[in-house]
Length: 331
Image 1 (cartoon, rainbow, N blue to C red):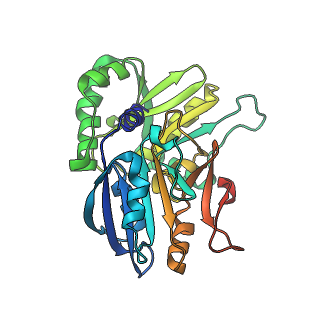
Image 2: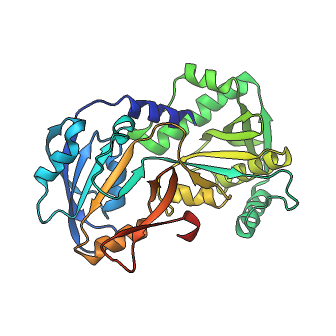
Image 3: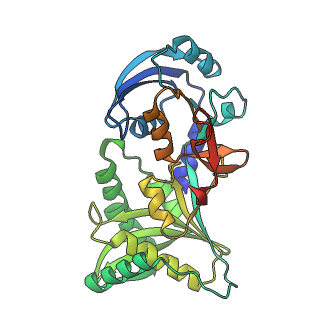
């Protein structure tokens, strides 16, 4: 939650000049090579490139331009062989109009499980996930404990959170200071996952009235022990359901139905929604000259902002040169 807020505040304050970058490489999932033009501050350029290309593309910086004139700069540099134009607009600029194309994607979306404590039919996990979680619990003697002890939270910070984030993300790791961690953890509960008597993973839980939000995760090793992350989430969700919560926040995900993290959270029933904070928008203008580019758009199943809702983008079957937007459950 707090990592997401920090990203939003950084993006909101962004007034740095935009870079113009030419990207060339093989289209993801297809043998064809394509050319794309990007304009933005680069915050989500790696995500865009990994979604669009099968491997890291060749990059050529064409120059820089004021954020206010990104769309005009793209037009000046666009030629007949450009397949995709991409603009990354900071939150305040995203509300000023002038979009380059129909496809407008928030950089991050929320995922949340909504519950009805009064419902006659109680929430249950999917059969496969329930069966796998129980198998891992039996095999590794997993169990959940909750702690509010400051000393235990400090151990989590030093021996679980920091090493796990640094090992997983390496040079791209972003961790919080001890002071920020202490401030956040002071109002949170630490969920500890044990294998027999060995503490192997943990996660901060933030309770607020009838809402539970999952916070920072840490593990004694990278990757976490077999099934540990899933079991920790399963046990925390079940505990929350037993306590009668109405919402469980799973945090932010990338804006694609087929994204691995987003798919994992959907297994628990977590739906997508727009973040509460102003959001950086990634806009695509796609050339529909080639079938592979149209197929790529359908395969990505991007979550696009349409009014105040999220819809999945694809190519219209009746009008192949037009984008259509469908509800997430129909994708």
